[in-house]
Amino acid sequence: MRPLGIPTMKDRAQQALYLLALAPVVETTADKNSYGFRQQRSCADAMEQCFRALRSANTQWILEGDIKSCFDKISHDWLLAHVPIDRVILQKWLKSGYMEKHVLHETTDGIPQGGIISPALANCALDGLERLLQEKYPAGKRLKSLGGEKPCVNLVRYADDFVITSKSKELLEGEIQPLVVQFLQERGLELSPAKTVITHVEHGFDFLGQNVRRYPNGKLLIKPSKKNVGTFLNGIRRIIKDAHGVSAADLINQLNPKFRGWANYHRHVVSKRTFGRVDHTIFSSLWQWARRRHPNKSPRWFKPKYFDRRGNSDWFFFGETCDDEGRLTKVWLYHAKSTPIKRHVKVKGEANPYDPTYETYFEEREGAHMLETFRRIRTLRYLWYEQRGLCTQCHTKITRLTGWRLHYCVPRVKCGSTGATNCVLLHPECHDRVHRQRLPVSKPRLL
Image 1 (cartoon, rainbow, N blue to C red):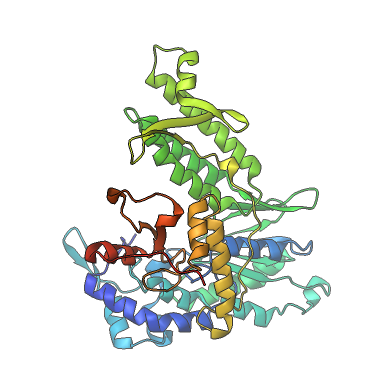
Image 2 (image 1 turned 30 degrees about the vertical axis):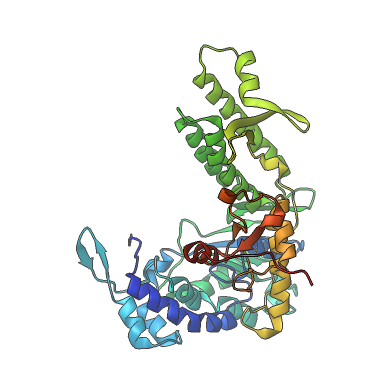
């Protein structure tokens, strides 16, 4: 397997510059239901499209496709012939080779996985499959081979993983899969025999860490997959097991970002029961951690030391730490079950972030996402509202992609308050410049 290729700083800068010109072209020519490595699109969009494609009772069969070594096998000749970019510079990037153990290896095919422009090149190669399927199997067309029924062919792709739906297993095996194989062969790619299977929707299938299945009662439900839950729990157990001399507060600081990230990923599907089971399993692991930490103490002794009442639960794991002013405060473990389940609003398939027509549309989506990001942090939510979503230094949008930093107008070392009246949100680079150049920052004026 080809190792991860990290370009030099000069090449990274050049690739970033060329990507500025290539990205609008890729977005304009991309398949509507391609969601990987694209701006303003996510796994949640792909899963919502899966739900829309499969909710009809006529859609019964799924081709689960996985491209074998996609980044390593893409044809250089195809890229040079079809990617609208300077062919001389593109050929130099593709043929540059890679270093491993101080030995230079040639590259005759594939693209480096560590390159800035590599995801865009991969999308260039894989885009077009959905249009090919739509041309051959239009949405309203009825096939004689299916008894005059509609084929219900839909494609959902995220990077090199994709699913294709159909009403008939024979249609997938006899026509669609050979069509996909031919499409990929032109680009030097092939399907992975081990991972490419045809499944009935009642048996269910895993896609992007979630399981999609139509249950006997006729309901189509998407839940976190067993493999994804098992991998997550194994990682959490490993952290807890290795935390021998770590305080409860430090352990919580390690666990909480992982809990939040995993729960937020699955919060758009049917996850409440899974969240409850995960919380119970983690509670058992933390109980064992406390017992190992104090082998000579009884549960009655260490229960109030590590578990306390919060809300309706008497078994919230907590730790104690000192804040910036030296006061003792409690740090609580995040519970996955406390994450609200909210249906994801899928991005429009034809929406293009480079098209001025959709500028307002994406601004509204970004605003809704930012409010969701700040749903448990009242101060940040208030500041974002107060600043109208703009950085007070550069006066451009603060988004999830740009990131943000909380800045105190009057520094804490000069007895500045920690309240919202003394805080503003800045971009990370603006925040660094303010401290480096010691620039004054004031609250925005309300009109």
